[in-house]
Image 1 (cartoon, helix red, strand yellow):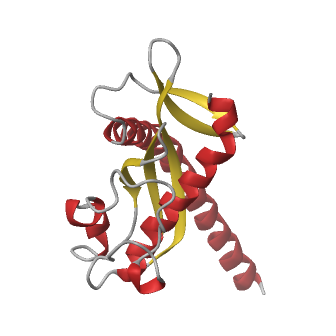
Image 2 (cartoon, helix red, strand yellow; image 1 turned 45 degrees about the vertical axis):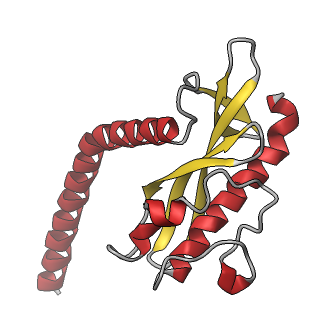
Image 3 (cartoon, one colour; image 1 turned 180 degrees about the horizontal axis):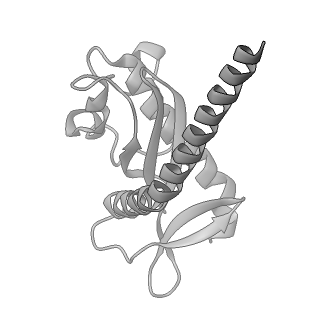
Length: 182
């Protein structure tokens, strides 16, 4: 009995020390990780804005941050919106989607994903993205296999569907807050 109590006490001490060390490492690394993510989001926002557009400012609309670029007279130029799909082949895909005031896709940037290298990661390459950029909201934002307007990345249909889901979600968010943007 005494041996069991001693083993439980030792195990409890080891677990407590391990938990404290894990918490300390988390607290130390949380700051740099958050700064890196903020930098990545800022770069993604800049990447999805039209060339020469004024720098985007953050506007909270509908409880979410929208990165809004306006001309000097306050006219809407473009909006960048974070969008997430949990339906990627490797799980969640998080993208920054740039949408023009004329209701067209300006571009997108993958912020994070766990898609298969060399296959699913091709959603961020020009062959796939090139067919999407400049297309109006009224397009059928699904892959051709599902009756939509766009070709999927070869051998990466699931990733392509998830990317298009992110774009559709961003467009829906944009249209929801459009009255507030103008």
